[in-house]
Amino acid sequence: MSNVPDDLKYSKEHEWVRADGDVVTIGITQFAQEQLGDVVFVELPEKGATVRQFSSLGVVESVKAASDIYAPISGEVVERNVKVIEKPELVNSAPYGDGWMIRVRLADKAELAQLLSPDDYRSHIGETAGAGGD
Image (tube, rainbow, N blue to C red; front, top):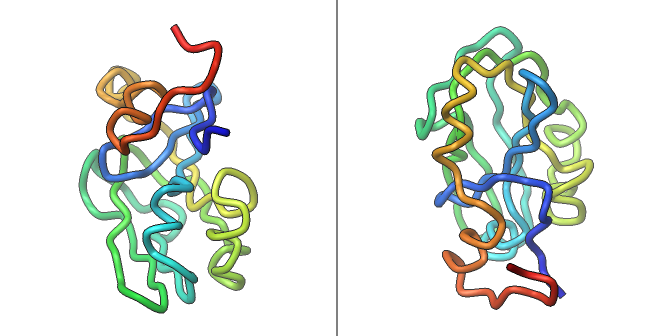
């Protein structure tokens, strides 16, 4: 079973992007949260902050380590997930669901083309593609 949903784009730093018009939702991947272990703290930018593609947008701390979260795209933060700040374990239990990090209004849709496809991300993390791949 693949831990890489087919409806998302990915960064080499293990963030995912779900585009919905000019607003994207960003989180960290299943692979990333497994590497981190139990997440105990999440620091995210405030609404209205600007993030730049491939620059740090926040920090996630686990029992093992603290890691930067990198912005897969540039834009203005329109929402941050308060639930994940209050309950960091959501990053472990639902990285593609309730464990999302921020929503950003895209500054440049062309940046999405610089991200990895699901198959490219699977190759990046050494996961074999599931059935039905191209």
